[in-house]
Length: 118
Length: 114
View 1: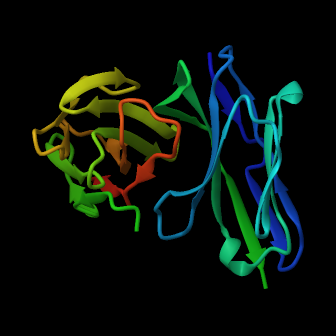
View 2: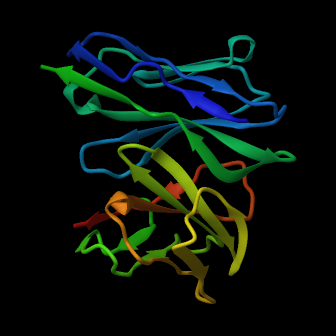
């Protein structure tokens, strides 16, 4: 069965600190997609990144970076120089795949609540 | 703004009642997905419709049903409500029945059952 584990329930940092959110997944599929979503206090789910299982290249987008390692089934998310506006719940998700496509059925982790203090 | 519209944003009702949540997908998207976010279960996939047809079911209770109409909007019907049905219900949309991109989520409908 597919599963996503975010072992860190809550993380608290002081502004400008770097923080890494861990995500470990389980799947028997050879093709799958991994996602990170942000849920700010307002409640909506904001897409951050998508990765397919064949692309292990790390990605950087501004202060955000992602480290995908198939060998350890991990897809970790790092925020550099955190800001108060980064305070939110962050979800890692895994999707079933049919062929090369994402089915849209996402399996979410339990989420990590990040609090960035000024 | 994701382009996915959900109504109502908030809903308070009593046990045993029935409610309908509505979702309008992004323009051009044919797939609609429903997810439930509750404190004890987290975010869970409920059901997927593509161009009016049910394509996949997740952990959806028999008291819940959904449909997608010819204009592609979708409704999630929740009946015989129980306290445990209190949750945030998200709708998401995507272009095809399967895709390589992101799902676009609405802002959710928060249901409180008293």
